Length: 303
Image (cartoon, rainbow, N blue to C red; front, side):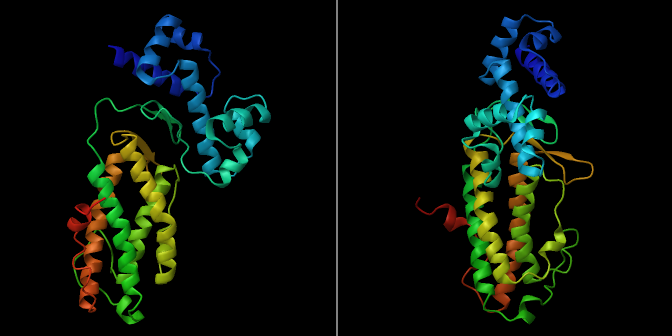
């Protein structure tokens, strides 16, 4: 019963983000007393309704700063603030930097507490997990192995001539990769991480054509940039217990809802397939020290 009431509150909150309801207004719309709603939300989310709404609006504003070129004043007004100065003070307290400076070096738009309601692009809210999620420690370890192995394969492939890098790999990969080559597979391994990191941040598009005809040095530089950020995402999913929390993938047509656990599972599944193809192609080219890229030794190594 309490869970159903809390979900009703979250639905009402999502529908009223562009209004300016008071806590009393929200309680009236739920046909409950203000005191009852405050206790309910505080128990379920760790915040009062007013504090939760302010934080969600700040998260929405941060996401807009992260994904658009909109002026800070327009973002401030949309978040319910009357002035640029008031928004800057509130944003600085929450994110540790004023909006313009944060925007230049931003990471995630989510604010603590982690197991609470959060803004979900493009205009919804995420509920906290309703049950204990499966531990992600093994998957996190495998992500670390994945980022490391892609870098090792790129380093070894640099010793090969272009005709070897671009030679078709003769294996049936219909529905996954068309006419794969060593170069295209290495680019897709990095591009997959980049694509999902962008999707989690609410991006609406990813240009697959940007992966074509890259040099190995360019792909390696790309991995050095994307790999740590994707690892940070995997660590956040693990440490904040977000496996069952969902987000909207706006790159799909129409947009689809994914869980963070599903994101990790998807990446690991398709990346394992592509890594295996790369390791086989390297073996055929005389580079055998990576074997099949088996993660067993990596996962069992001392930490």
